[in-house]
Image (cartoon, rainbow, N blue to C red; front, top):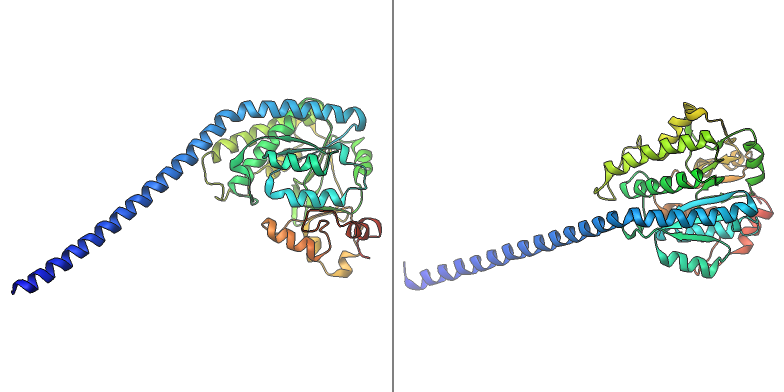
Length: 342
């Protein structure tokens, strides 16, 4: 073989070797970066877990103190747990209910300090406590690990409030309040420990978006058991990716339903009428069927993800803020004061 041909082959070989080495180095570099990213994420999670107990106790202490102040004037605390991704829904709901005289009773637990600052500026009557868990900010989808982690923490704080004799309405902000439900709930609560709503097509399942709880012995016993179940679930999903699916048989809604159906702790409860406290199936009904419902609250569920909920709320005129997060009071007036079907 001529020397020139040998040299050409050698050059080709060296070029291939160079590009292969470059490719291998790139893979190693990417792998190291991914490893560093995972290690950093692991360190953040470990740091949060280490500080969580201390943070949680501080949040519970603040929440109990605020709740007791609310109880002195109103005898009932409206409680919910949010993160920064839910801020538009919170603002829309606050605009929806602005004239119902309930804002002084609200206690929000939020996972980021920026939300608290915005609330204090825009809604000074609303009380907000921060539980700093940055890993649980952003959109959290129902039945995924991130969402369930939020519910674990919500249940823990909820239990602590009840053990401190706080009467509570647990609510969620992805709902339309056509009218103020509190007087009706208080009347029903005179003969019951707990009031729940139901879910379309799911017999004996209590919805997790609207639960009225009195701090009776039965409720305290039940919530302690629910909290124990949720803590075990929290341990089970610890360290898993927030987007990983969790079995729909494992969540606070399912556990609560099982406990109240067994009348755990001797609980006395009543289910609010579905025609008045309805879920997202309302949006799928024909107009003539919707008009037969004398609705108090509509839960904007049965769609997955905040974007779809937002789109549906806007389509039906159930979105009460503009792009600058200011109240659209003409829309509030149309739905709340003039009637849902006007």
